[in-house]
Amino acid sequence: MTTNLLDLDPAGLASFFAALGEKPFRARQVSHWVHQRFAADVAAMSDLGKALRERLAHDVAIAAPAIVSDTTAADGPRKWLVDVGGANAIEAVYIPEDDRGTLCVSSQAGCALDCAFCSTGKQGFNRNLTTGEIVGQLWHANRALLADGTDAPWVEAGRAPITNVVMMGMGEPLANFDNVVRALALFLDDNAYGLSRRRVTLSTSGLVPQIDRLRDACPVALAVSLHAPTDALRDRLVPINRVHPLAELMAACVRYIEKAPRDFVTFEYVMLDGVNDADTQAHELLALVRGVPCKINLIPFNPFPGSEFRVSPRARIAAFQRLLTEGGLVTTIRKTRGDDIDAACGQLAGKVRDRTKRRLATRIPVVAAR
Ligand code: SAH
Ligand code: SF4
Image (cartoon, rainbow, N blue to C red; front, side, top):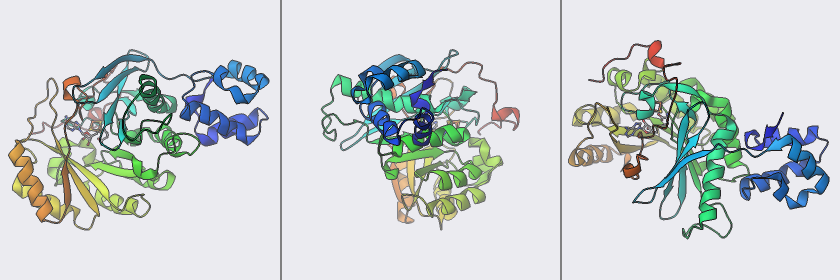
């Protein structure tokens, strides 16, 4: 059977070469070729020796998932629609900023957690992405950006243009724990992408047991999708709250910070007109997060076809921010970018087939969000 090198984390690559009777440095050499020089073929690995290359040519492939489309937004972001088989497609989005290039990576085809305001959630869940499909997004994006020649100021000649990764694309990364942790290991490994833990952020809707597991397995920067200051409202907006309510979630965040690369958690809060954006809710939010070292990131709601919400007016978002800031919380408003190509937060829809497969809604009744 052919092994896809993109599926192997550093430990997996080491045991693969050990099983071939090769020295450990071979694993590092191959990792450099694949993840730093973005080789698509073993034949290109000129320092491996002919016999080993021929052997590998039989045993391994570098199989990134196929790209269905590649679109660049007027304001800079670039979105790849990636075929992951069985009529499913997921999305990866590159977001260039002044001093860094960030890739927003997907972890599942669809999502079972059914948050009321999320386009991915509305599609239901098909399956977890493999490690290779997750890593393949970063591999492909770096390769494509290098091939096109980027003049971005942070890119050193011949080096990977992507400096930051956010696991904020389609899917709930902690519901695909093992494959995501293997991918994170490659993002961090010096022989692969070599990103620091602070430059890799995982966003979760709040799977408490897995937050604890991540803390032990691979503590990267953590963002938590809060979106509501009380259980009553969060139960409706983020249904997983009925399983792991706010008190448990806050406690898990405090535990996480003990090992996290940053000394705060980022709370994401989508601004929904008339739903979660009142002054009283800002005060409730301040009370909720008291004792949790955190920053707040307000995300203007991005509409998608069939969505039942409206974005809070700009002045309301500013007033909400002011209350939080006055209460002592560092609070930013996320810039909406890429919405002309449906690449903004929560607009990633991809194509999810057989969507009703395993939806949280089959276990927990969906309650109308208002
Ligand atoms: N499943 C993970 C990560 C993917 S979603 C999570 O829920 O955290 C990334 C972020 O976009 C989350 O904070 C999510 O709540 C937010 N989001 C989802 N739909 C949105 C929308 N329509 N407008 C703005 N943000 C949205
Ligand atoms: Fe899933 Fe996150 Fe969307 Fe909720 S917001 S449905 S957890 S992708």
